[in-house]
Image (tube, rainbow, N blue to C red):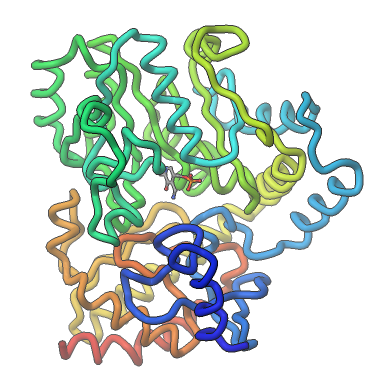
Length: 427
Ligand code: PMP
């Protein structure tokens, strides 16, 4: 079976041939590849062709595909029970491991996706404050529950559908949207509606419109404004958690949010999410408090085991330095390659996640992201894929480097970029 046959077969039974929209390659055009295997830095498609993978399942695979230690943990766990639907020491162990480096997460609840984590965090914030309005930033993505599909990032941006059909106006009205990095706009909103605001939710580095860093003082302002008005600050660290360091952006920025959402890396590639924060807020959750939340497969032993194994690898001596070294080498290499071809390219980096913008300056918000040369991205994507290097199939997604991307692999990709960039510079 070749890729075209595989995808045609999929489209006859799966909606659009995919289970998540951005996988349909609408952002770059063409027929998506279908994969049968992944090992280290490589993915293998149905035709047996190998690609260096810079998507990493959209973030979870920070130690690479099928790391032996993670696979062993899953297999050993599976032999002793796949799901209990009851308390197990594994959940406690993973929660304790997370809390050691995310001290703001005094109490934790595991869920099965990032979407559920942010949904629960917002419900908790509303329950704890008795207010309904939440503030989000244009271009930030927090999952696909109703209130967050307003000026969203990731797939909804790729598809040009920032607002989804099926979201009632009444629900959308409970979300106020502000430009990312715009301190004055947030201040003005708090001046006008501070009494109604339950929470501000933010990706502390925005990873769903490329990778946009916070300007100095932005996160601090959010902390001050929320604290001053009795609203909660929610850091959505689903992408950034365990990326720049063990403690995420909040550790790096020395800011303590009230609630934090995690996902991806803490499940090592298995479905997981977590919400955690101040104990008195978290204790509002059922069974202790009146805010309801539940999950059949929440805290699933296989996901907990995969997450623990992944975090254990990340905490081993020298691993952080290795990741940092590889990602810096790659980010600098891409920027230098583009410069040598007179191609405007700005590369942002947070630990081992990168943002690539065809622009001479780093965008600060969604409008500036849209103003970059997004039309070059599909050409870049396909030219690199033909050479065996797979980036995200959308200009609005981040680029993920894993532990398995050693120097020789990265040099190979940089070599391919040096072949591709002159074509782009001529456009
Ligand atoms: N928050 C952020 C910052 C994300 O990047 C994502 C997904 N990429 C989510 C939430 C939603 O996570 P999930 O896809 O697991 O529901």
